[in-house]
Amino acid sequence: MEMSRLLKVCFLLLMVLAVLAMPSASQAQIAVGVSIRIGPPVLPVYPQPICPGPGFLWTPGYWAYGPDGYYWVPGTWVVAPAVGFLWTPGYWGWSGGFYAWHAGYWGPHVGFYGGINYGFGYGGVGFVGGEWRGGVFAYNTAITNVNTTVIHNTYVNNTVINKTVVNNNVSYNGGTGGTTAQPTAAERAAASEHHIAPTTAQTQHEHSASQNHALLASVNHGRPAIAATSKPGEFTGHGVTAAHAATSNANRPPNATSSASHTATQNNRPPNAGQTSHTTQSQSKTSNSNSHPTNSHPSNEHPSSHPSNPHPSGGSHEKPGR
Image (cartoon, rainbow, N blue to C red; front, side, top):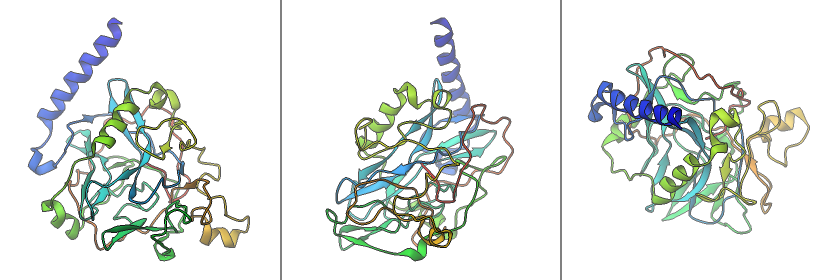
């Protein structure tokens, strides 16, 4: 008990020192003051649960940090807080000697999220898993797992699929081994747009994850059994999907064939329309004219240390989450 209290006191002290050491909020735009010297684990590879219904947008999973270290917040489907708004995922960035968390947000355009390939349409820049059309969200079934017998506002755009295989599921920007992406001019311009913080459902979802011992990286070693959920906070039932070993075909949907040539064009697609099985994260091209930022890019300094927990290596460029 005394050791646990000591660790929590040290954690709180570290947070205070980190806030004092960080640049001003106007410069760094860090919505949540969490910064540490140990980088997050690589992103796990997992299947995407089927979309629960019209109006839900995919929010990829991510590693959060608490008194007991990093823990996984499962990817999940969330109802947007306003028509026309899209989700910009949060990301870890190396800056000023710390890994700082840049919180995600809702806005009219997808902003900068560190060049992290979260998969399922979030390939590092923008989002290609769907778009708003006339006040209704339409799903790109070449990227997302949607039952078209239930959801009819869909389309297919195969041109956004990146078929390049990359053995890297890095989860942070800057520092040693991190992504080197920087905000584009359009992303910088979007910093002044109106943004909405994560919804109540999202914050409760993260809190529930923080209370689940099995989601600690030190426990699951980078492969959480609850990697994604159909709805926020629902950590049990058929809507839950688990992380897979990077050496398996975790990023290949059920309708993929054994043909090498066919797989080259099909392995980023969700199951056939009407099926309720799961599909895996798909990688999209990192180009989107509507992308915008919210957070400034952290400097590319070298971190003082690296995660000590074993992590799975990434499989395909259709990352995980998230």
